[in-house]
Image (tube, rainbow, N blue to C red; front, side, top):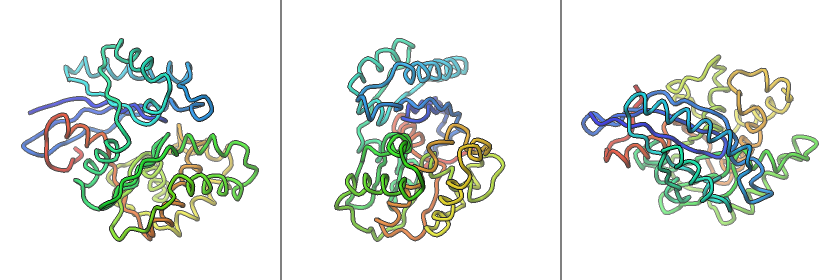
Length: 293
């Protein structure tokens, strides 16, 4: 049985999980998450900040030690924050100094691996990350530098929900110009979307299997956006499911509101599987969609 550990260095969080192959089936253990906000300040400076890098490097070191203790090869990849930063080479050197070889994915490869892990490559996909959003459908692939962290920074001066919507929708309209409705079922992945589904279910703690059975309809999403705004900062901080996402969940949800309307999606399937499973499949050469243990 082939086994490996996967490390996803994202714009909002660092994720780690071990996975294995049995026959042609890929399995992945529950994912461990550290919110480090690597992309914090990137939109303004074009560079990864020292404190976000230090937070991320600490998490990477902890996860690398876990893989070493289990005797697992560790495969690490980075997405939008590292991809778009002017000092990406510096960050990659510092990661590799920890004994962790790092691959920086293109937007296209990030989207391809996400849909491979989530659906085996079938249908359409929306992946809202911290620094970017990827959309894939038959004949359509878009990667845009807007994610929950960037949207949060964009809305920092907004005085009310309407102002937040105007700012996020205007940026999305600019970045997704020419995107047309798609006649295919869509699946949503990434922490913003899975957290939205968990909130809609009223879960006391995250449960990937239950989340994957909860489709998101546009009417319920609009109601959730209103509820999140009405909670205020204190209310969002009190929600266990929002730990690490207290500030970014509402801006991230607004990205999803825009995309569901633009793509003509009445109901969005949700998957707890994503690019981590896709990357494991790539590294271990498995050919079937991933399954959780």
